[in-house]
Length: 252
Image (cartoon, rainbow, N blue to C red):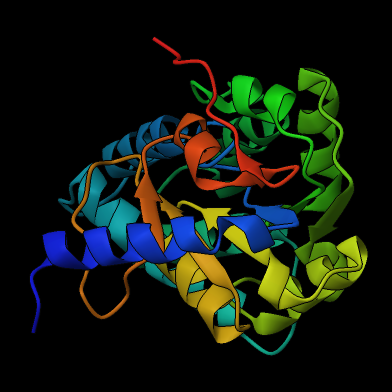
């Protein structure tokens, strides 16, 4: 099996050769355009761990919460992200004999979803590109629209799980986004920070994918993105605008 450095180089060449064909983008939002809610989640897990009747670390709370959260997202009966967040945390709290209020803890997370800070390089990229963009997000539409309004962002289209009644990595999310742009998968690239929801989901839908590796992790060889970037700023030289690659100004 080739090493990961070789995989990254090969994917970089493939994407750059195909740049002239890129006519539209699908963008994840949280963790890609804006910062993910990692710090808020960590603070909630700290409070839960401090309120339990058993000895547990915040990291263990976070792992249990994420597993319950993912299981609820994969269930056949669709529920909103807010509902899943509270229900999955309540499940963990019950197991740990926690004295706190899961709904109250989650309010901090919900407030963050509506006013997340922008990631470095995102605004510069969005202002420089004229490619049509569809946001593809698992967050509830009301919270996502509040975040877009907060930052004064507008896109060609927005597709949320509320609309499709499934969550990424389900191919239906990407198919609806393609329909919203009026483009086929051969001319669209999806960009996101989750190897599972974004990269694997895009590949399952027949799309090329760019992984936003915001944590500096190594890409597993069995699930490698067509290219890897740390922020949207790096997309400029890789994508075509009016038939020519367009580099973006460096964001320091």
